[in-house]
Length: 190
Image (cartoon, rainbow, N blue to C red):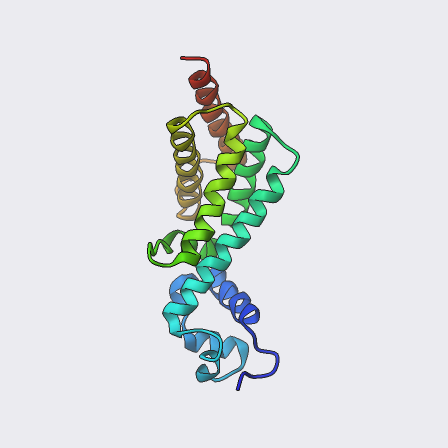
């Protein structure tokens, strides 16, 4: 019998807090049960062990990321949309470092829910980049490019790789401007 007040959303929120504050390795059934003030067996009414929890948490993270990116893109096009989506992506990684890391490790090709959550993010990115009139493989190359830039930037920042005293947001915007210059050149046959 599920405990009153304990549901999957509450469990995922608590697990996300642990991941963001202490890292994904700290997300265990014992630490989660302690945070929720329940016994570990109570969690099994809502999740299928630690592996099931991490999958659901990864999907939850991808859904949150998708929502942030979609909000950033609404009403914007081309360069403005790309900059806003990039800012939203980096802001998500900064606010949710553990959850962000978990979303990247969720690549189970047999799990339809994980694949669908990831596909939604890719499809949104394709929509944003479609404003440039990219064709066929150009769109995929551009999606891979922006994803590599944003993930690389996020990873380096999280690991303390940017030690010089320059504004990180300025660096990000210059990097995105360089990417966009390449997109514009690609479309102009350059």
